[in-house]
Length: 378
Image (cartoon, rainbow, N blue to C red; front, side):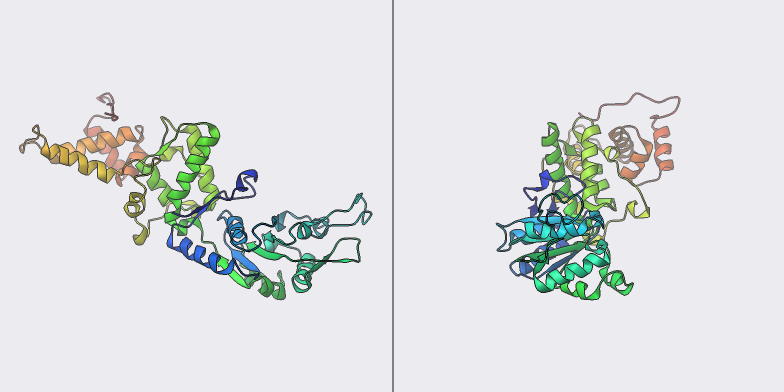
């Protein structure tokens, strides 16, 4: 498994970064190959991907694989630049250039000289600054605000966006010449839901990270929690998974994370659960991580082992109604495993809530004749 955690990421605020990216899924491995191809060059790079997919970490990875790795990597969020101060922030200013300019100040371009400047959300750059950026890319020099002296630059530009710049060009909101200057080496970071084999490695990483940070004992994911993670659609991508794991660790019981411990912000229809693609089935993906300390064994494995022990036992008789016994035991164990929650039990078993309720009444787990719960930890 290949996981990238940049050493400086922990010093960044959560609004500024996704903390980790992995290259386990086939789409991610293709991205890693692309990174390794373009990193040694001096080409400008354009990273395309939704918010929270780890575009900045990809840019940092390119920087660390280049000959500029010992120089500065400066990340600037273009969407956070105010129109009045943007030019000064990017290019610096001279003392007295405007009211409040009490001393000389270098900008982000100068700070990144000899290294890499990462311009995140480049599509939010104003038309005026687009013109100035184009000139920098062409001339490789800048002028501080209030100065007539050019400053030569040796810098690599990596830009990123979560919008289709081609559409912005056609709408007249982004300069076509600047687009072609930036779009020399293009990388596409897929949304997390489209690379499901990255989900569990990331979840494991965040469990370890937050257990260490919070001083908690190591927590485990239950099998149905794994299923929930693999089926969720992640409109917030890696950042949403990180937040969900953080919340789950705060509320889980006995260091076992259950599906109800996750707090996903369902802001739109995309957040609904999705069926697993046939090439990425739950068993196929989850089975790879059963040896990890954060993952409990899968229900199928438990059931197989239990049945084998039953068949080999001296207490098993052929005249027993084994089919009825298995059904009743399955309902009882599932119901207690889901903390006596009918909806979660139905999801776990893959049946409707009406079916679960009927079985619970049949076996007197609910209703006036309900029998006490039993311990499933034995």
